Amino acid sequence: MSPQLLIDISALLASFLFIYGLKRMSSPVTARSGIVVAGVGMLVAVLAAFLYYFGVSEAAKPHLTTNTILAAIALGVGVGWAWWSGKKVAMTSMPQMVALYNGMGGGAAAAIGAVELLKTSGHHGALPLVVTIIGSLIGAISLSGSLIAWAKLDGRINGTWRVKGQQLINGTVFLATLVLGLYIALVAEGHAHPAVTGAFFALALIFGVLMTMPIGGADMPVVISLYNAFTGLAVGFEGYVLQNPALMIAGMVVGSAGTLLTLLMAKAMNRSVANVIFSNFGPAGDEVQGEIKGSQKPAEAGDAAINMRYASKVIIAPGYGLAVAQAQHKLFEFVKLLTDAGVEVKFAIHPVAGRMPGHMNVLLAEAGVPYDMIFDMEDVNGEFKEADVAIVIGANDTVNPAARTNKSSPIYGMPILNVDQAKQVYVVKRGQGKGYSGVENELFFADNTNLVYGDAQKVMVQMIQAVKSLDGGGH
Figure: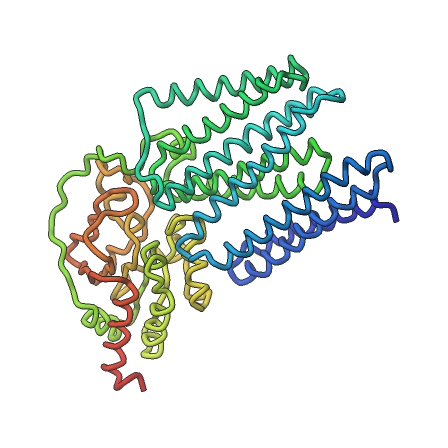
């Protein structure tokens, strides 16, 4: 069997594994195995790339030997770093890691494009050159934009950066980048001066920064999903340039899935993707929200726990604060005490809860929460009015009634969990701070709401102790 035939078979197998793995990722029950399947597909694709060495002429082998050694070293460094960081990263830092991986994928696609554009020999066709430019542009934007998203999520960049004429500046930089790209592809026919090619990539990277810096923290889940789609598209385009079926299929699958997820998340916030990218939503410090009536009423953790122990139905709305406190295991321990006492308990998940898509689902799955207790917003929102108690743990903007009623609020129109419709609401939070979007939460001042102040994990321990003491030590 020739090396090329083996490569072709491997590409077909890898493509199947990518698609099948992604299909399994669509359900929380099979998501873990889907990741493993897709990972095996990637392993097949990577190993198949080394077979090219055996399919070239003897004259070309010395040059290819150097490249193969460099590729093996890069692969070893990448695998080692990914294994170490993947084992070490905390659940709260998972969004940052996803942003970094998005950026690395985009950067890899841009690097492939740069190599193709900087080749000094051979004739380049117009279509492959245009595709290379598009892939390079998207990949470079994804790289720098994802790095800014990572820095924002990791607290290394605080707030947003907005200047007068921001859209004009961004538009000018993008137009200049596009003009350079078209010049390289259609006028210079792929033989532009390296300085011109360098300027093209530099402007593309700058545009990624300019595009991401003005976007507020509350929009970061949508931004991460968008850059994931960008990376997939860039990889798909560069796969076409290299005539690599596995790259083309994997890139298009990731690109289409990421695009669909981005649209769904934007819809969940009742906004368009363009509004997310080009508007000034987020903590800029100049929003006018209006005066909130009422007062924040504190409650003891034990009293809240006893109230839930005697409730018929409890709905839990988790948020990023739950991940920060690493309280998911104690929360589920408390939930098991409630269910053992005959209380119906459900988890309500907002589409943009946490810092990335599916963040809360992964967090709860890590704690062992059964999938049949976890419900998406549209499936559980109508049940809050039937709940005796709703408890909010670490969530803020996704439960703010101002999104429904206050037209002056920056989050007006965003669908929220109907937590305020429960008979009694308890909010577990560390202090009186605002949410990630910088917007004051009207729920905290409602007549049926009490706030349990403290670290979520410590609060859950107190609640567990209160229920156990009530039930005679838990027996």
